[in-house]
Amino acid sequence: MSSDDKSSSVSIEPIGGAQRAQVIAATQAWVDRAAALLAQPLELPTVLFDLSGGSAGMFRVHGASCSIRYNPWIFARHFDENLEHTVPHEVAHYVVHMRYPRRRLKPHGPQWQQVMQLFGRPPRVTFDLALDGVPMRRQRRHPYHCGCREHAVSTVRHNRMRDGRARYLCRYCSGVLRPAD
Image 1: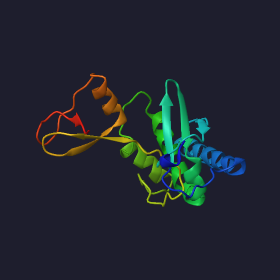
Image 2: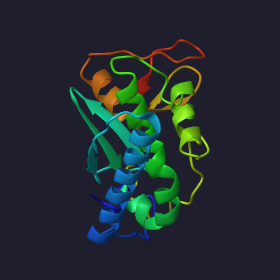
Image 3: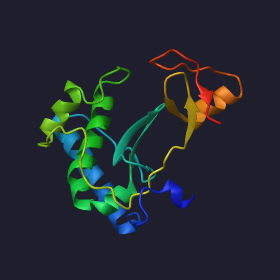
Image 4: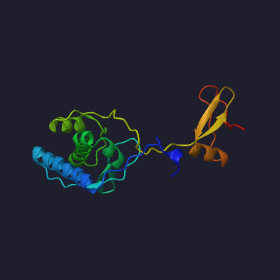
């Protein structure tokens, strides 16, 4: 990864084994608390530390398996805040999934908010912590133009247009986007 792919030249190290064990233990504690409060048996889902970018955590369902993914760089930057807020936030997603299987519910809808309130935590959806030093992937943009202005097009769209698989129009003048020379 080149230095252009980083959000900052100052980089931090991801959390190590001891702090990861703390996060897993906290995740287990919230799962156990939910099981007791809801009188529903719940197992610890797979806990991974493979998330990157600007999200501190993510609950994921893949087929029949569930996992909670944490961002080890954001946890390194704000460990206590994430232990207190991100862990119960993601466990609440897991609990909602287990209570309402095969139902399409809003990720931060009333069921999730109810679990967060049961946990005694505010149902916050985002955080506003500084992310200096956290590795971020920057998407490259390609210059294009139409009849009225310049456009910055993602690499995916650029490749589709270059290969003749897609045409994109300007939202304002409806002109076809052309590569800037």
